[in-house]
Image 1 (tube, rainbow, N blue to C red):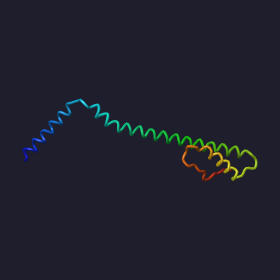
Image 2: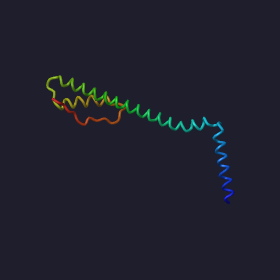
Image 3: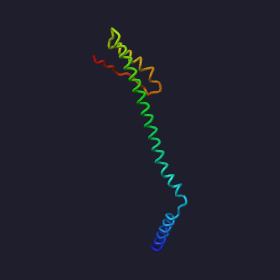
Image 4: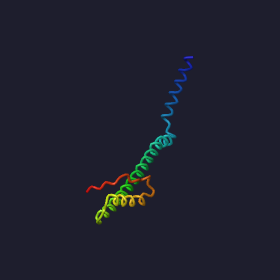
Length: 110
């Protein structure tokens, strides 16, 4: 029995040595192994790009709401409620395609 396992082990080492010496198929194996990493990197880049685009859009909505509120502040007779209404009216139409965006509070620093 020991003789059979020794022969099997020897044959496996021979096959491994032959496999290392042969170069046919190396490109296929290398491509297959590296494609997993490349697909992961591409996926991460797409996710990061979408996240940045969404963050930029949300910042644009916040900036537009702030500008609307400032324009309302320059008018005479403004109140906290009128500023909140202006901000909410500015945010709602500008959030198309973005996740649920709600105005939770508006702070006016006098």
